View 1 (cartoon, rainbow, N blue to C red):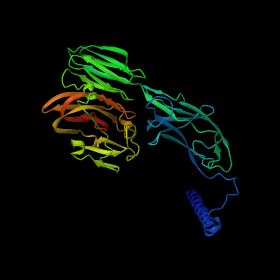
View 2 (cartoon, one colour):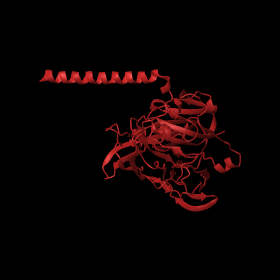
View 3 (cartoon, rainbow, N blue to C red):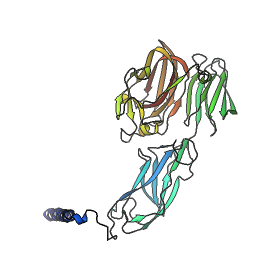
View 4 (cartoon, helix red, strand yellow):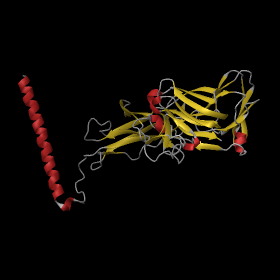
Length: 396
């Protein structure tokens, strides 16, 4: 019995080799004749190819439901494929280009899409996120078409799916401090939130909010909002930098985006870059590392981000005090979703701020302590996962 099985297996292998050799000879004969170099196809009956049928997902920075110049592809978003009867077929995450790919081919039965019919593509919306394009579920009907690359076609492509997180403003008020936050939209006050001293706060922001004013003795300041959730840290009546002073030109802001550290994929940030001393921080092109969602989603502008090498604590510093206004912080990997970052700021030998920030690999947190003077900032994570930085804003 075993001998018979071995003989059958051997015969199968020999037949496969013979088929491949015959195919190679046919290709060689075709390539030998110059008339076949640019031949017009005459027979459109065969379907031998394969294509990816893709769902495209993007971060909708302006929340208008259209993929525009200011929007960015999102990595790591799960998309599920069902057939016309609702049966689950496959699932795929969006890649560095924002595409969740499903192979289509009538010649490959293992391809998720290999027969005509209706298919449902469903984008899994992360908790706390919204869909601006109102199309997280899309239906497509694929019909047979001989001669097409896969043998199947649809009348239209899937439409881009825009996502954005609910914008929240978080922080904590020091003991004995009386404060309030005014939410602004186009120069008009749209909401006022009194803050309890010694308590944490978490506020949902209106879609049109573009700035906040913090009122309180010793902590008055103003912040221009980004498209991302914002963490203010602990509001202390000392060492606070007012953005009003910045806007008046008294305290100019400098945004460090890490794009001019290197034109290549990776380089350790050298001391002296942007006038600061750097330790254990690398500049990385957003597409340099395969499968890292945070390096894609944490990239706010340009092509490069910065990250804590090997997930170990990192620092940036200067002998001369500088203002630490804000920075975008992202978890490097979806496997570390919910990782906690600790940001500690010193002025000389004195620790003046210590804040913890819950990270996501899907979008950065806009950490804005707005400290008037620091000499050293230390960044670490609880479980030593890499922390991604972009758009570090300082003043000098």
